[in-house]
Image (cartoon, rainbow, N blue to C red):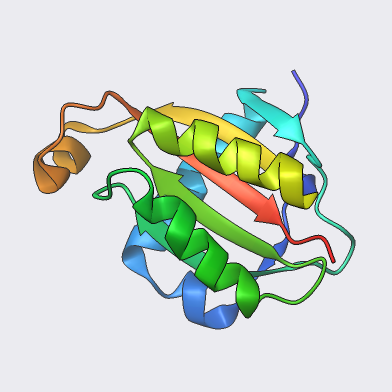
Length: 136
């Protein structure tokens, strides 16, 4: 087991103050220490900053992908966008988009808490964490 949390970008101050972000980011860090990740571009570039967080847990596909495309327009080259989703189609769509655009992608899965499921009104048992590094 390897700890990949050192591969994560630093977090913009405004994001660190958001409660939903903090809970999801902590779950991603835990998944990284458990090697529960896959994808390409697992290492964020040195000095990369997490610029945007998209809480897509209440969104059906393709809305998370559309929100990602909007966020990437204002993300600097080499910086990151963090997106959470519960719709499994989002993982496939975002993965295909990142491959075509050449963006780095890290994917991790964590169990959804009962509170998350009740809040979102969904039956999903898994939260999908996607960390996208913008390629220019």
